[in-house]
Length: 87
Image 1 (cartoon, rainbow, N blue to C red):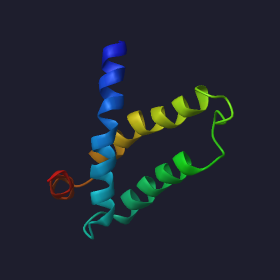
Image 2 (image 1 turned 180 degrees about the horizontal axis):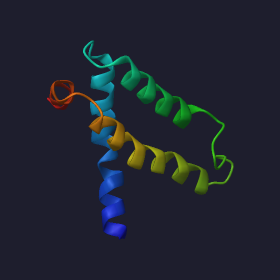
Image 3 (image 1 turned 90 degrees about the vertical axis):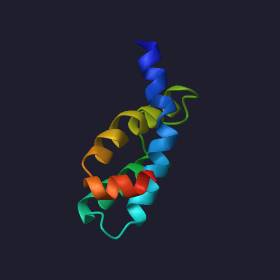
């Protein structure tokens, strides 16, 4: 269980780069751009489900958002946009 979780968190870095490239692609649908921007705003925002004043729990909240929601949103992108963002 922990190994799968660790792999998912480790893949988050690649997914962030892919999301950034997809956001900059003009062929990406507007709704996908808005959802990706909303995730970025949630991670940057000081208002969280678990505030960052709790040393570890606040960070786990942000990391889990990126590790679980970001891959789901990347799967919603059109195949050509996703392939262009991966290269």
